[in-house]
Length: 205
Image 1 (tube, rainbow, N blue to C red):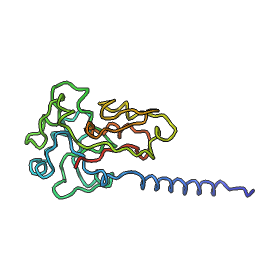
Image 2: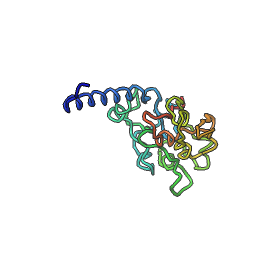
Image 3: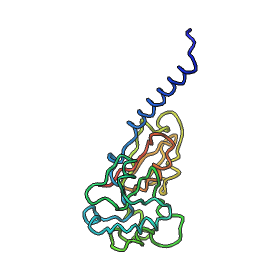
Image 4: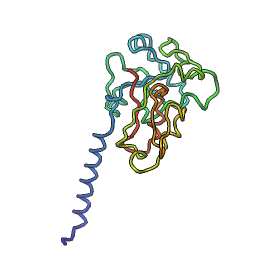
């Protein structure tokens, strides 16, 4: 057997690593595929864009720092460019920071909706989350999910704020999404230990 030099070994390892990284990038769902995830209470697109004054108050109020102002720079990271009127508007990239629906803070209202001065985000009570919040819906890829491939995981099930409802558990902690009850908070996507993520939030469009 031919002996491989240290230099050759490192060269081959680097090439293999680059190939794996490229494959992962191809598999990873881009934001362009999942769409623009707006904060809770966002109005329909045209009305939202006309009312939003790009003040950033919703982002400042967010206790989990999940709301960013949409720019070319942060959009590029997730393969999504601001469209007409999108620049400077609030957006959520669940893979980076998910919305925790103000679960761990005091107050009756969702902070971002309370802070919005124009009504671009409808003011919502925490008690109204399950009936009035629809940022998107979780989409599961069973080919990537560990629990569907001879491993027991269940991390997303434990991250979901509505376990047994929006995200139900089948045998061996196989997650099952109920689109009617999922609010699109992104906590499942953020918690997924698989890379690329086996579960992602798709904008409710």
